Length: 131
Image 1 (cartoon, rainbow, N blue to C red):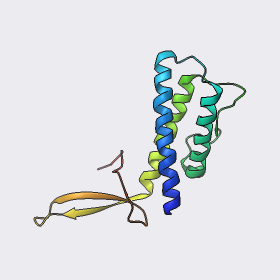
Image 2: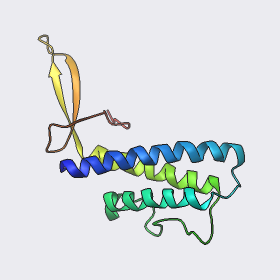
Image 3: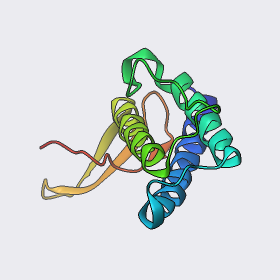
């Protein structure tokens, strides 16, 4: 991946996490309350960027791109969708990273480093490591 794409991905993922945390908190207090238009516009901006990054292969719902501003969704619906986008962003990230293993002199693993494919740019380990 290109460095610019990684920058956009990381920024978008951070925004998505922040929105999910905030809307989840609202949802716990009153899950049936409608989200206000200001917050919805922010959510839709981040979802638009997620859709661009994820493309057709990784988007969570092929018939959904963003929320309608004419029919405001409730906090619970927004939380549900943001959760799905977070999972798909992580799947996309996991398909675009690779590991490098540092071995000890005795042959055991000393440390595992994770990098974005085609770069020397480090990232964190996958959330869904399959062994």
